[in-house]
Image 1: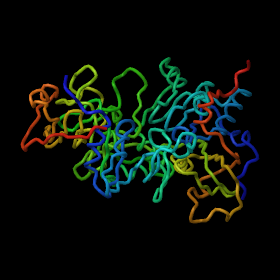
Image 2: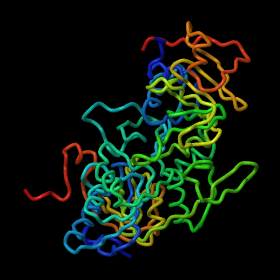
Image 3: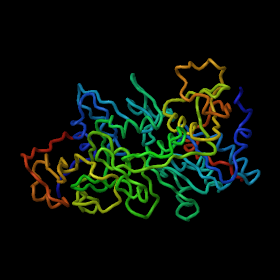
Image 4: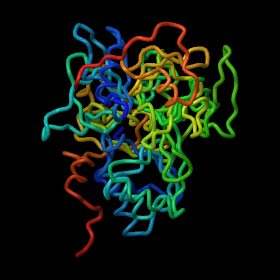
Amino acid sequence: MTVKLTPTQMAWRAAQDIADGAYVNLGIGFPEMVARFQPPGREAIFHTENGILGFGEAPAPGTEDWDLINAGKKAVTIKPGTAFFHHADSFAMVRGGHLDVAILGAYEVAENGDLANWSTGPRGVPAVGGAMDLVHGAKRVAVMTDHVTKDGKPKLLKRCTLPLTGVGCVTRVYSSLAVIDIEGGRFVLREKLPGLPFDELQSLTGAELHTPDPVADLIVPEL
Amino acid sequence: MDKTVPDLAAAVAGIQDGMTVMIGGFGGSGAPIELIHALIDRFLATGHPRDLTVVNNNAGNGHVGLAALIEAGMVRKLICSFPRSADPVVFTELYQAGKIELELVPQGTLAERIRAGGAGIPAFYTPTSYGTDLAAGKPVAEFDGRPYVQERWLKADVALVKAHLGDRLGNLTYRMAARNFGPLMCMAAAHTVVQVSRIVEPGAIDPEAVVTPGIFVQAVVEVPNPAQEEDLNRARAVYPQVAQ
């Protein structure tokens, strides 16, 4: 069995790429954990699409204020420098190119940068939220995802099979096995878990992995 | 000029069958629970209004507020971005039974359509949804080499909004992230009804701090200590109370 990163470890790795002064939107769910791993000395400002910039940690249970929540509808806090704004301003920040990074979850990512993360098909109730807006406008759109599905099938593909969230929008993938850039319509492998043979990683990936540059070891602390 | 109204029943009295009603809030934050419940009370007493088209970010949670409005059978169509929640059972069951119509709109597009409706802009182009199922049938145009999708404005007969402070002229402030869609919906409705925690004298709100200027508001009703949807749901509240 191949060892893989936990979601917490993927979040840690994604956090290492967030520069000092960056404005960042974190998708609902696992990407929210990225905020916990800002490297010391760097100050990133987190945006939540329901109208807060620069929110703080979750409050202690019992002290929640339900007018103060994030996009996942979890309670957050204010801190010095927090700003509130309405939804049109919030999405002006998103589509207007003002965010530096958006980190989202994924059902599928294709080598051409297409992302599918909002619908698993015609069954069930469709819900899109802010995902289709977030993939446009942020200077970098990164995805945090298990490398394969629960059934062991590749999530990184030549082309997405599920309904798309956005076309050609993803620039980097933090998977449970590797860090992969999307450049010129192809997957470029940047880092992989030490000890994971390239051929095995390739066999778990639905499109060709390119290695124009030396591949670094993906080393993440125990968390 | 005095836009204050004496009570919740008077505030929702003008809402007619078949109207489009924008309801503020993102999940529970900013949800005008008391105005929604007053509308349900009217429906239970008179059978009206019904066949409403409701615009909200979500589809309600639990059995209070918007979920209760849907459960009462007053809503024909919902225009929203995310009809899921911790407990979306009311909407989900009606939707899967084909008893309620859904227009799914990306969240930023929903906000901008409402803003455009209030600003007199009939259509606009956005990169959002290009190349996806939600752009089906919509005009696409290229600007500076990139494709954009045309979206139409969204307007309403009535908006129900929750704010924090309001004066008799309709000037409003909001509380933290409860602002969300409120200022946009106030602009986009022909008749905007706002519940505020406190009605203050004109001048008590610093002009620099007014978020919604009174021109966008037609009625203000005071609801001190408004209920929070999240608290009601944690207490497993059901509206209206079912007789035992």
